Amino acid sequence: MITLFGVVSLVFMMAMYGFEQRHYKFTFTFAFGCFLSSIYGFLSNAWPFGATEAIWTLIAIRRAMLARSISLSSPKD
Image (cartoon, rainbow, N blue to C red; front, side, top):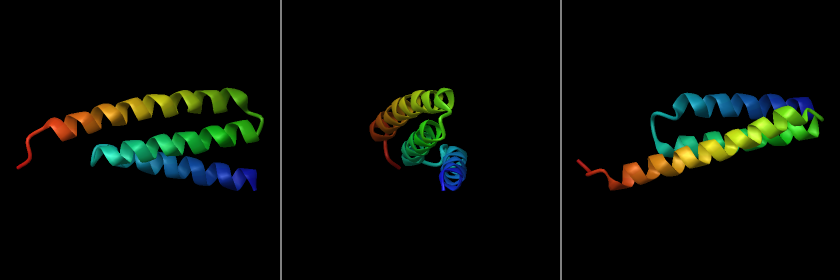
């Protein structure tokens, strides 16, 4: 079950990474995918992977917040 959770988490994370350039909301969902992958890492006793994904979660949230502020401040067509 943990392996299935890990596969689904990683596939989701990579899919959202591919869509990041379309809208800042995909960056937030990428961060959620990183969070799920982090949980998988800790559940599977691969704590370096879990810790790395936790850091990527924070980086992605920061990037999403920056992209959101840029999107909200840019003039609309």
